[in-house]
Length: 352
Image: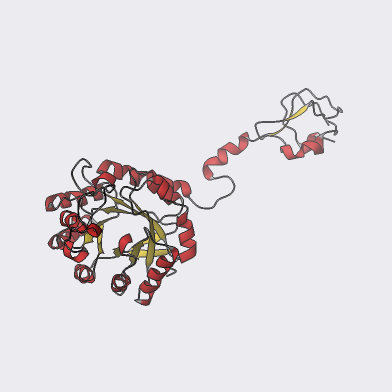
């Protein structure tokens, strides 16, 4: 397989020219309510998502319980006033749910995989036999974690928020050394929510050319417009946070899509894919009928037999019944073989 072109998740080919693979990120929007998590997966499937994604960590695998300044979100953060530990306490997905949620997803024919945040999470997810792994943007610098996930041989999706070219290259090299054969990068802005002006989507085709892997988008903007633009620029995966109700209190609700919005996203993506089509010149099948209404050369006055054709009695008009307009200079000065009434489409056999 040429990594530049595509990967395969659960039998689904993903890459250039393939239908966009749309991931609904559940993150913390289940509010640690198992029943809500079930409803979210059902709603994601109904909205047209190809996959749902979890996050596999505990507060203790992410950080330490400290209120020191380094561990606190600043006043401009969506989570201002909370320590990292407090945030992850309210946001994590209980591990005992995850095998059951995967069974549910399988019964609904929707993929389910996760982002592991430490090596124990990879071991846990391997027992679940998830079909892929996603490394979050903040963890792209965690080379041992990338190597651990890559060693499973599963497709590996690397989110690149904050990462420079050297860091991306290092992460890809580590994944390949550890055995990864199927790699995808996600363009991302790790701000919550992210402003559209910070997305720099023109990086997507550059990433594809520079790193020779498929490229998608992990999108933390509000709305669906940025995701649509990303697909037009070549993104083959779109990941958006998903919630049943954005008005609910959840760490991620502010930049998540509700089911109706997610359905609109998927529908618009599919129309965008149709519009992108393939490289094509010349009339399409639907344009064939229009060809007859192109311009051609007509007599715009009665031209008696033997009279010369002039710029006054010949014009380029619609429809395309006569000689092509490119022949205009060739016929001016020739004589009519017969009377050419006004409105006659000109043909070579009528001229001398």
